[in-house]
Image (cartoon, rainbow, N blue to C red; front, top):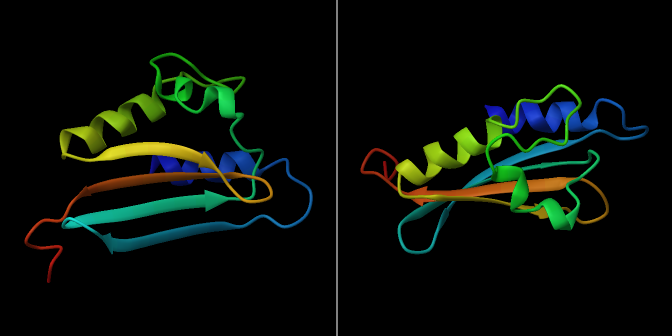
Length: 105
């Protein structure tokens, strides 16, 4: 949910098309891969890891805890969370986690 809210907030002051795309798919090695992409302001490459640090924020009124907590939750389930610049503008946050029996349907 944090990734979706961040995506919406990143696009609020953008002129032109605002688009968020959420994808989920099975990845190799019995993993689930989820991505949240937007056409927002993006994440400067120099902050790609730093934004996951506790109390680091790029928002004027941010706490710097949302992405840290999100990464902690994903990692506690055996997964990984990262960010990459999106083609053009925006950002893509992605995470993987092991598929569970319920996920395999």
